[in-house]
Image 1 (cartoon, rainbow, N blue to C red):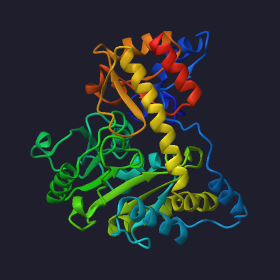
Image 2: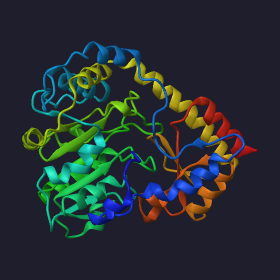
Image 3: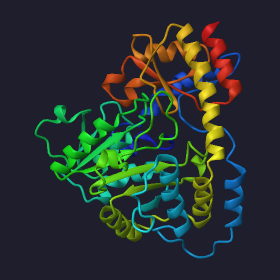
Image 4: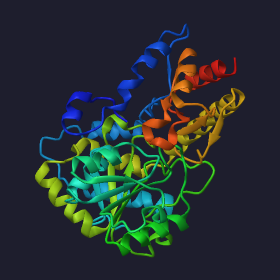
Amino acid sequence: MAEDAGSGGARALGLPAFPWDSLVPYREQARAHPGGLIDLSVGTPVDPTPPIVREALAGAADAPGYPTTQGTAAVREAAAGWLRRRFGIGTVDPETGVLPSIGSKELVAWLPTLLGLHDGDVVVHPELAYPTYDIGARLAGARPLAADSSVALGPQRPALVWLNSPANPHGRILPAEHLAKMVAWARERGAVIAADECYLEFCWDASPVSVLDPAVNGGSLDGVLAVHSLSKRSNLAGYRAGFVAGDPALLKRLLEIRRHAGMMMPAPVQAAMAAALDDDQHVDEQRSRYHRRRAVLREALGAAGFRIDHSEGSLYLWATRDEPCWETVGRLAERGILVAPGEYYGPPGRSHVRVALTATDEHIAAAADRLTA
């Protein structure tokens, strides 16, 4: 999550204060540690961008004309090919079923607005969730509602339902049966169902399932969208490269509005994105790095008295000592380790902290040493 906004303007718009501002004192405390700061609070990739991607970016650097909002045929075909190759999804038409976005956060934040939601509409998101689902609803004037099941929603008729699997912050992976029930429930009520699947390449203890899979949607993409990002899988956070795939009718609507709004991915980034999606080797290598780091941190946290909940996927460990999360943040800051308090992601996270795997091998090893000392 980017940390580039002040809280004053947000409050003027009726938005909550930017949460990461409250972590600043703990960051300074951790920085004062004799060994320096080890930042495990934000999932920012630190490993090199793959050479094949950088070469594609450089090769497309001569780009005097405007790019298209729809994206090049190459980038759309690469996205559809990746879904087919990695996850067995062959129902996405690259011509009508894929739309590039300027990173995934942009799409998440503006989707309610792009769909025309307004005052009186309800946007459902998970009880433990990336804060931008809530913010996106507020920006559109809609009402955010946290719920993890259709039973909890009762008679509600939302306009948009967000799913997130593997989930941020807690790494939970939803089974196909649950996803299918939510898709069916949303369709019965005329709601769009949007799944944030940015961590789909990083599933550790369960198999990944996309809402684009026929086992989930019954072979129809009607009312279904899936949001994907290359930030983590390809170390492209600085490129701002993502895409949304699914219902061609919904994507056509999004495309028309995005054209008017000038939401165009730069042409060199599109070339880099296509190269990244066409190559699996660098993703497998990156996945192995995170798998090793996860094992080191998980063992060290267990030795330090933490319990790890969920964490079947994504790039985080959802850890607790059954104490208020800010006490845990303070304890770790004393050891020069900065983590994210669970309450940033919703009230159910008040006794957990989110520990990111996105640090160098050296920093992960050093954090483990400090935890077990």
